Image (cartoon, rainbow, N blue to C red):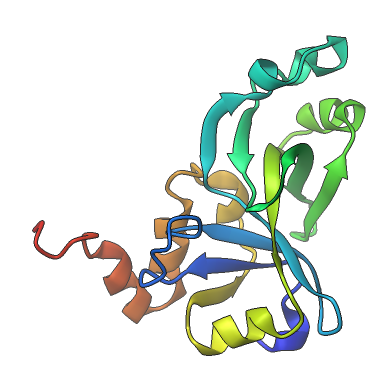
Length: 179
C-alpha cells in the first residue's frame, strides 16, 4: 500500500510490537494526510464495560448493551460511537463520532457493526510512515472480516490472511517456551 492510501485501511500490529497498548491490535485508519498525520480506532480491545455502565439517560437506553472498546491512548475521557458496514456494491462505509440518536438508528441496520470507543489513536506527520518502514505494522485493505469476525479474534484472523510469513507468526505462541 502506498502511503497516499492509508486512510480507510487497517493496521495490524506486528507480533514484535508488544508494548502493551498496541500489542495484537487492529486499528482502522479513519483519517490520514501527509500534512496532519493519522487518526484511527482500535477495533479489538474491549474494556469489559458496556455503554449502560458508563452513560446514563434515556438517550442511551437502546445502546446500553454495546461493549466499549479501547480506541487508543488519546482523549480517553471521551466515548464516541462509530458505525461500520458494507453496501450491496461491496463498498465499505463508516461514520465516526456519531450521536447517540444516530447510533440508535444505525444499530438496527442489517450488517452494521456499531462500536463505542473510549479514546483514539493518533500519529504525527510522518510518524506512521516511519513505523510502517520499521515493520511495526502490517497495512491491509479493509475486508469483510472487519465486521464479521469476533473482534477478540480479529488480530489473528487478519494476520493469518495477510501473508504466509505473517500466518506463521500468528500461529506461533506468545512465548515459544510454551509449546
